[in-house]
Image (cartoon, rainbow, N blue to C red):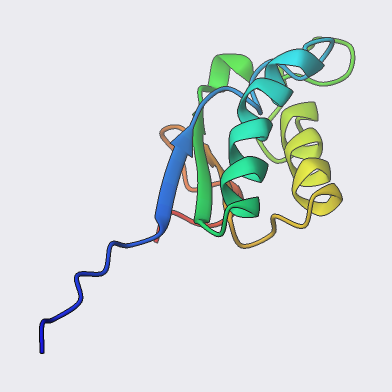
Length: 104
């Protein structure tokens, strides 16, 4: 009897969903279509993004902390809306903050 070779059905995707949050919804869909599409095909699909401190903004385009940013709120709302909790991570570049999965 021959051994069956099994390939992992896990995919990691990275992009720019959390960065351009105000007025760039099309950019979100560019990455979200891959995440949702691969999941629909049966792949365990993860999305990971690092966000630079210069990109943390509030709704008035003013600099804020990672935790208080519109970026963090937007990213969390996407995870909730599409049932991707446990499969997405927005990581604070140079810090320990995160939305969704932690670095570990």
